[in-house]
Image 1 (tube, rainbow, N blue to C red):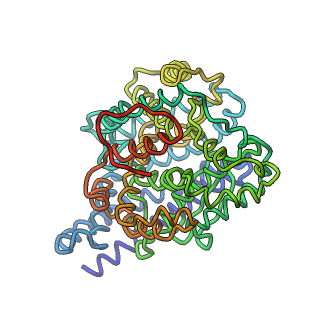
Image 2 (cartoon, rainbow, N blue to C red):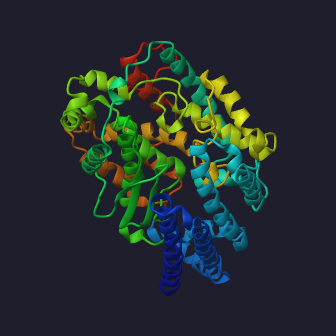
Image 3 (tube, rainbow, N blue to C red):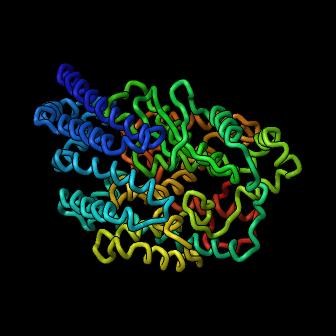
Length: 512
């Protein structure tokens, strides 16, 4: 059994090498690659992805897993070896349902579609990328049909990123959240919005990026095992546990854009850097799910990075970096500015309170596209209609409407967005558990120290990689299932201090 397990690990490392090489090509395309390389890059990425898929789905690997099953049953279920066999089998049984030729065609298409999107969005030309999106929708449906027996065609696509979740589960969670969230949104947006003009001066890019790098070093992002570069749409990628990279973007007339996208991606990066090195090169060396991954980026970006305690420490440093712009701006003015609540067009720029409405809109549009009740050609109009219904404003163009997110133009339609809101909910729930165990976290944040929080997250979440499903991990960490109450409590506590909010009938726990 030990010999067979070693053989399995060797095979999995080779698969991981191919996947990491493909990821490196994607990172390069998203950062430094000249546009003239797009066609060849699509072919190269597709070739590597096909090879990785073929190697992972060989009958020999399936035979190894069958032979190792008795060994798995003898081991503690949470041991590394048992978890590796269990998770690999789950991924293998999923992967063998998808033909390698389809995977090659799909990844080639995604690469080509992404390149078209990078040109279509600045040009505000949805028709330029529409044929790509129609092909993406057709291939997304085909992908789902490789997994018959679903309740909704989106279920297999959601399961890829949030294992165990179905469209009905997400709709139930979103419905519960919307019922509690909309009264808060309405109460705040009925008031005069905070003045955020202090954020919209001229802030040289180089100094913005320098401050962001210094900040995430303090949070715990390890630049010995990572780096930051610029891109169109920020992301985190991993080539190994020793090479976890993040990207950001900046606007010289918006201080918050680079700063908070840097902290957000560092949250993702710290998660991956915190996985135990023993799991490197195996399917276990990944985040548990999209929702759990987003819980970490949103926890660090919002719960920590937009907190008053955080800026009690960091604002004097920011003022020193931008003395001409912020020297006469009070901490209270700055704090209100970075937590301004206002219905707006762009998801990635949205405040904590309205953000989830953006996600819900996209999720429902995905389901309608997959169901066939909405055509790609009608998507821009549908976007505008629903945006007006939810936000009371109409996007002036497609650049800030249906073209704003990269997800549909570089991956499947379906399963792309629900993780963001699940992450908001879980981030608050995990942070509440951290406080229960370490109340000193608050005072440490105010002192600019994050070791206790980072270590707790690493011990309870990061180190395990994806040994546990999201539901299993939430149970281990919080003692229960996913709950919206800690998130609503967090929002009401924080924004209740900034705005007048109506009383809620049901009691909620206190979160600072």
